[in-house]
Amino acid sequence: MKKTNMLIIGSGPAGYTAAVYGARAMLNPIVVQGIQPGGQLTITTEVENWPGIKEIQGPDLMTNLEDHAKLAGAKVEPDVINKLDLRQFPFIAHGDGDNIYEAKSVVLATGAQANWLGLESEDKYKGFGVSACATCDGFFFRGQVIAVIGGGNTAVEEALFLTNFATKVILIHRRESLRAEKILQDRLFKNSKIEVKWNCAVKEILGKENPLGVEGLVVEDIKTQKLTTLSCKGVFVAIGHSPSNELVKDQLRTHKGGYVITKNNSTQTSIPGVFAAGDITDFKYRQAVTAAGMGCMAALEAERFISELKK
Image (tube, rainbow, N blue to C red):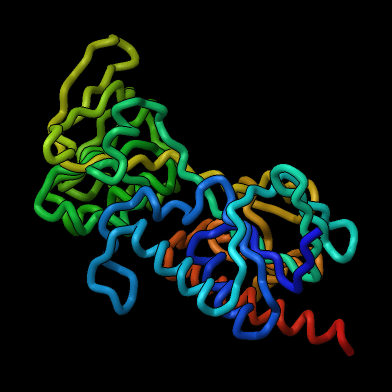
């Protein structure tokens, strides 16, 4: 049994920032890293939008954050939480093996995962031309042709955003009509930089080896099965995100496909003492810097919660 005032589940920017602030508040926080230590940034190459650092590799940024959390006094556990019981207090979490954690507050920072196509070539070029975040990586494709895959709000918004950088954006959709809101569709169809490929499915992403980089993709016409090769330098997969809510989906209030609900201007969830920060609750911005900000908020709110318990 490992006891703590604050258990942080997840080790992305939200989790490590919560750990820094929790440690400075003398809460002796424990960070359980999870199955992907460092979170989604560990599969990102250049990061150019982290304030104060002009350019850094994603894995290096996460290593820095982990070191900072440890230096502040947080304990970082290379463990995975398999079960979390929020119906009793203190809260109980079960890790791999025989590890059990007892916590007076919990910060959920388990993040979300982008939905991918499931292609081998997609995995190969992730971070080398294949991305799931236009605001993160669009800047790297200035003056290039970019492909966006999807047909919902996210896909249309990303296609419109990418026209700020690209000479041309190709939107590839499996159906013959978009699912996005009408106002977004109107903006898309009026934009001369965007071309829509209807009834098409991506079969393969093409690229070069040294250095790794996307050169194009192969799409199949769903009606005729005809294969076509398209040239592009970037591929943005925009078929949705799934919040990593497996531990809490039956215990906390959620919405919009499983994102944990928090109170307005707060990280407090539907259970007192349980806080959510980062992509587990953020379906709108999904940025490292906003996740870090919420991690700070969660730690400050957890400190206040613990202080009230002592009165």
